Image: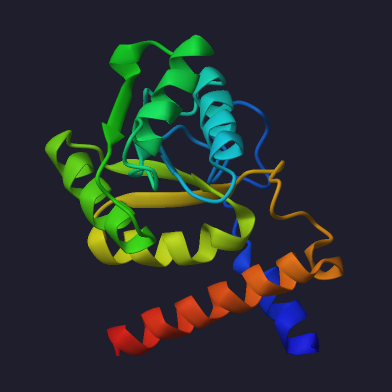
Amino acid sequence: MLLVWLGGRWLTRDDLATCQAAPSSAEQCHAADAIVAVSGGDTQARTAEAIRLYQNGWARFIVFSGAAADKTGPSNAEAMRRQAVAAGVPDRAILTEELSETTRQNAKKTGQLLRQKNIDSIILVTSAYHSRRVALEFGQYVPHITMRSHPVATDKQWSDTWWLTPSGWQLTIEELVKIGWFKAVQS
């Protein structure tokens, strides 16, 4: 149990933890070219955090990545774009990648978009339990891009007391297994 608890603490990666609300010249606290939010988990919270970062001047673009599980409606990326536009983000500042269905595909397909747009630095926004693995995947597909990770603080599926819920344990174990698989395949 202790190992899983430690693993859950390790999953969370926040490179902006020591930064203020807006970018500054402090190490790790400078603006990026784009904020990349991947869908899944609490997609609305991930989108809201990407919007907040954008509105505070952290980047000039937001990239939303993700297909829809339900193919009869808009993609997750399109739903995220609509949420951002409704919150006042200019449509010209939004890029979408609507085909990816897995974290690996998010990294690969978004990486192609980032290269096309000559984006050299990003802030990855996802759920805390997912932040370590998404950084690993993006690091594989876009190693030339400067990357920082920033998890959402308000996530329906994850909190600082994740170990008190069965779903928190399940998410932790699943992510640790997926990271183990990622590492094994990369060896």
